[in-house]
Length: 75
Image (cartoon, rainbow, N blue to C red; front, side):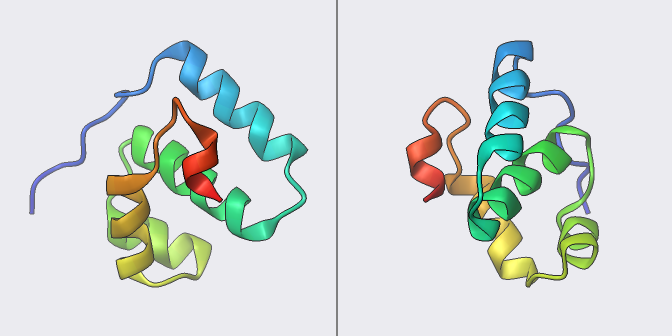
């Protein structure tokens, strides 16, 4: 299994995602932000799914489709 890319987000993207994580009152949006941040930390998708208690399919989807430059994609 290939290692996930680590630190693919810019400092600005990480800061923006962390801020959105603090401000959002919607659990599904927080989960999607966490998926992207954990992926950026180099965590494999199966570990992210186990940690968050969601399906590996959900993690795979948001790793591919979540755009850290457009947080609207996470709604």
